[in-house]
Each structure stands twice: as structure tokens, then as C-alpha cells.
Image (tube, rainbow, N blue to C red; front, side, top):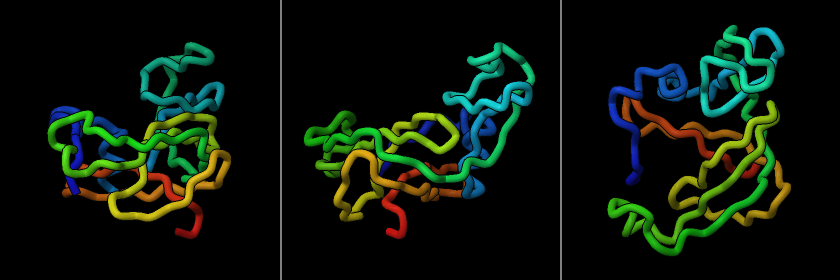
Length: 134
């Protein structure tokens, strides 16, 4: 599967390290309890610097999706069409994701999804959200 990956220097950051181990973690505030993405050393809700990482439940709802019919990057030219999703996690975080290559799905806004971490190598993985039970 062809993917666009972050530069190696970013893969040492906690978000990517957790994914490489097979789990989706979210940056969370230890004071107000809110989760946020993208990760930040400051809580966007209460402005606390007391943040850390917690495992996400993996439960999500499909907020929107689009079918890409033209390549947004040269390395994806032979992958079109592909599906881009916008998901709302149970923790209140919204993520852009997609459907794994080759998976046939019948999507509708509001449907229940679950996280499936797809490993590309020992340092790099991505979270995809697929229909529950798929």
C-alpha cells in the first residue's frame, strides 16, 4: 500500500510511537480531562501545561467522507479513487482518516466506526476507521 508518511524525525514523537506499537493514543489534559488533536503541550480548553497521553477507545462516528477521484500527490496516482473520512472519536476529538486500500464499504454519515491501526513498517502506522465488525 502506498502512503505518504511523515519525515523520520517526527516518528519519534509520542503520537507516532504509540501507533507504531499498534494503539491510538490521544494527547489529554491531566487537569480538565479533555482530549485534543493535534497534540499540543498546552490544553486548548483550560490552557494547562499538565498534559499527557491516554489510549483512545477506538470508537468513532462518521461525520463526513469524500471520494478522491484525482491524486493529491504523485505517489497516490494509481490509488484513485480512494476514500477520505472525517470521524468524531468518542473522546470528543475529530480526525481525518480514510478507509484501508481494497476494503469495500457502504458508508453513511452517523454510522459507528472503530479504529484499525495499519502497520507499514516497524516505525510507521496509521489509524483507519472502519465500520464496526468489518
